[in-house]
Length: 101
Picture (cartoon, rainbow, N blue to C red):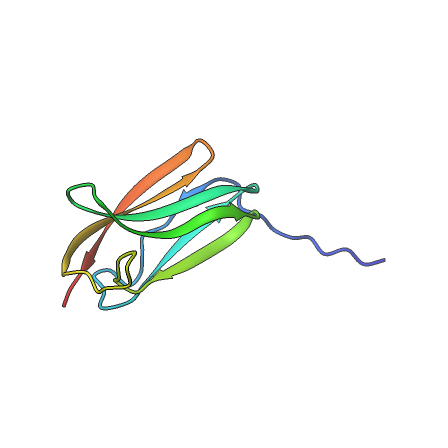
């Protein structure tokens, strides 16, 4: 019987988005060392929620999600600085990104 070693991340990590600055699409990468409920949210600089990208249980692993610079209603957002935040269990991290138009 052959078993494959599946490599899992050692720790929770939220990487810098790429490209940054971006227009109109950027990728957010993150690592989950264990299965957990994950929420990834985009905020404007006033702290208002712009878009929820992930809001569900996810298996451990190396993950990514794409944001197309739209809000929760599907409308394009204006150019500027945005914050993206991951919450997975007790882990919370926030990074900045810039949308150019």
